[in-house]
Length: 116
Length: 113
Image (cartoon, rainbow over all chains, first blue to last red):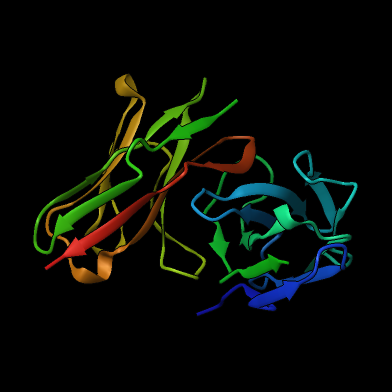
């Protein structure tokens, strides 16, 4: 069964350092999402891509976070510099649906970030 | 703006007993509603979804949910829980023209023998 791949699974870093997460969606899925899930809370959308274009990054802290999906396939989420409050699970999800209909999201296993 | 409320933070149920997890949503138009399950340290897996039609939706692992527009609710049910159902459950809402899902804060389910 096709899956959304994420790496690394776990990352420990010191504050002010840079960190990057990678996501490879299910083949053929046009829409890719990055969610952040703080412990004990539900996922919150950071950024949504439709192919290589950003559809929604209104909740992305752009002073320190960046995301790209250059070829419309895999994606990278970067944080620089990391802050203590960035400790969370970063979830990538993909969907076959294109603009106009909320479809089923397939989630990866997530990247757990701990900032010391 | 769309929002989801899951009023129960933590529920404990005996194995074999029935289960109902509550979900209330706020959205002006017809919502698309989802239930996801998350095991510790894992990603989210879709249990079931409602787009339109029959308001009682069947999902995987024996779960079902009922959409009640008058109550703005989409409660998740299972007639008999198994120890493997212990996990975190998230309700989410989306809509036509808005693929972004808004999640509730989750309900943690504990199963006792």
